[in-house]
Image (cartoon, rainbow, N blue to C red):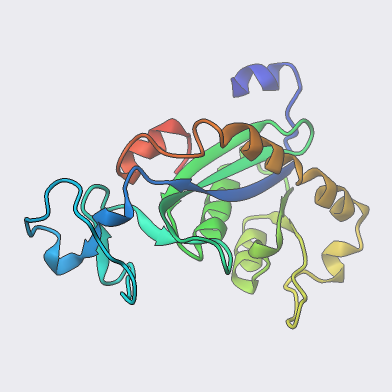
Length: 214
């Protein structure tokens, strides 16, 4: 599909956007048990479980049906779910997906996947990579620049100093990237009712075969 899009000159080879979303794992909260009790029997296939006043973390608990799934939420006040994290890279010309991968859900997964997928962009020319405020960290910005990639990341300057300064924002292309990066949200909107809303497979290895890349 990418080869056909390139043949028709539909893809930009200079300007890209990356973003991530949660993929709900094929596992229930009842399967999320203390690691030292996961093999204990009892309660039948659908036992009654009271989670109130229980401290449940990924360090102490794991799912018996999908050990790769992690209990995670992307924002404060949101519901924690057993999930993975899906990542997309699109070109900024028409918003076509150029790379994708599935990773373990974590607070750094989006930035790590962005650096990895950006490093897989073919060619040696300098490219730009747009992203939302969640990618505005000194480490992520530094790693992208080390790979000859200009980070067109939205500035997160609320009670902190952004890693993106006037060296980047003064160029007209930065403002264009901020508009174009919204295209990736449309891609997630189309995909979530199907593939990206909930996984039908267990394990990161099996889920990653629904995408390309990492």
